[in-house]
Image 1: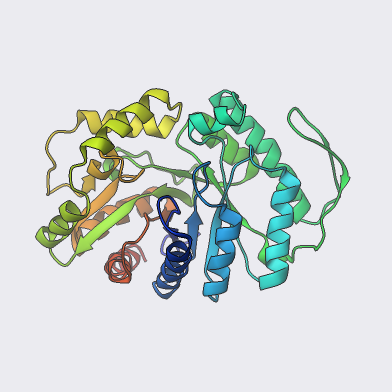
Image 2: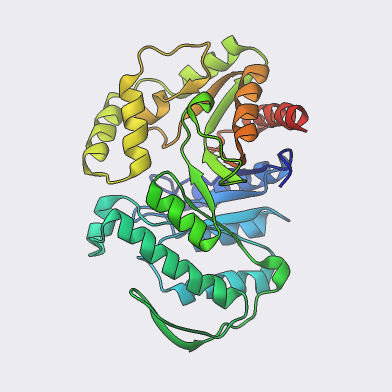
Length: 336
């Protein structure tokens, strides 16, 4: 993949604490913003407390012409055949491609509520087996499989999925188990990054690997930081929630970012890498904050390390996506 041809996803709003009418409108609106901004697709989360991502993805498909939902797939929720059936049916109805964000974990309390105490690394093994069944069905195979977690016999899929609409597959690659799973199923491993100068070179291992990162940028650094501090003020309740979540989480990335946040002092506005929104439980990814030139330079470092996929945070406005687009335009020009 040429370095300049990196892929950008936005993220869908979440339904928690939002009325149904307002939420449906917001999903469609953000989808249209994302499409106009040139995003390839939009990540749709899943957990026990929000709307089903497959039904939300229908809102996205109805509101746009080409934007691809990146649907979070939780193996604890449905059989792999159901996932393949969803993909092929949506392709049949809309003539559109999807991406699959294969999950191995989730909030620990969500999994326990579903009577799923499977340890962290074993969940990745289960996701590998699950994903192989899904992708074989979507490729048109008749699948017989007798595995550790799933058994199917002469299983086939209808309606068939056209080759041109085969889904892209992503998976968390923050832990060794996640990276191993990505290798085994040919998925794009996505992580929550450290600062670019602290990241290993991915060129010989994971060409096209991805990162999940928020961006606040303006023509000047001072303007960007003013917006960032206004959008993410201190939230004591959020800090307590973050601390409690860290105590019960077995997530590799959650522990990693929490440790990094604990080691940081006051924010340095010369350094674009910012964990304050994560510390206040406002979001789950680090942010890059600064002028167009400074943030573009940091993104260029990630691209040169081999990261070809960027999943942005939920955009608060179309204007914000235009500012982010200006940064990625500079990044693309620099690496081309």
